[in-house]
Image 1 (cartoon, rainbow, N blue to C red):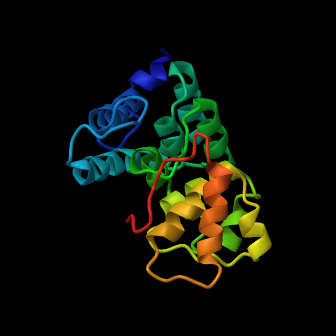
Image 2 (image 1 turned 135 degrees about the vertical axis):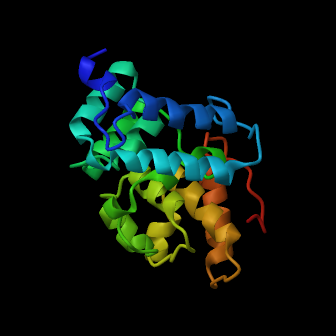
Image 3 (image 1 turned 90 degrees about the horizontal axis):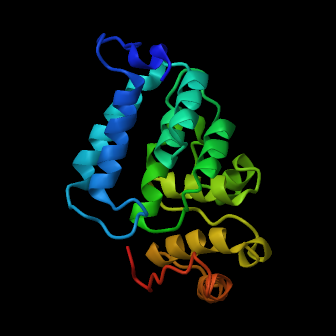
Length: 213
């Protein structure tokens, strides 16, 4: 491995890029198995805070150097989202790195977890689905990741026709968020049924039921 990655480039004079990479991946493998399925432990909030602290150490680490490092060891979804904290990071590079990792994004906690680590300064400060879709260039991965990263309820402010014709991955996230909402509009039940049929027999049919939170 290139010497620069074994040398500390951080303020504490000790932390190295491989140390941060190992930290965030060890936490993910402790909390979930490598494919994401069932949680292994219950102290997820503590691990999330620990990993966020580790990623924030990358704030003065060059984004291109981190991306090259991750590509050399094998791009992962956690390497991709950590990239968002690096100096000079661009959100399109985060999305392309996520795609390169081949990590699936589905509306369940274990698969949504990486999205919650994306640097919020690179994401639109909105709960508007219309604005999220525009920021994501109408592409499924960015839209779903931004929905997963939301801290509040999603505002379904797109025309009914666009909502009902959403592709399976987006439909699964919209259905999930609508099922979790306590406030319903007149067309919501029909949309939930349409989205249920859209995702049926696809990898995005995660079986979330009415009333799930």
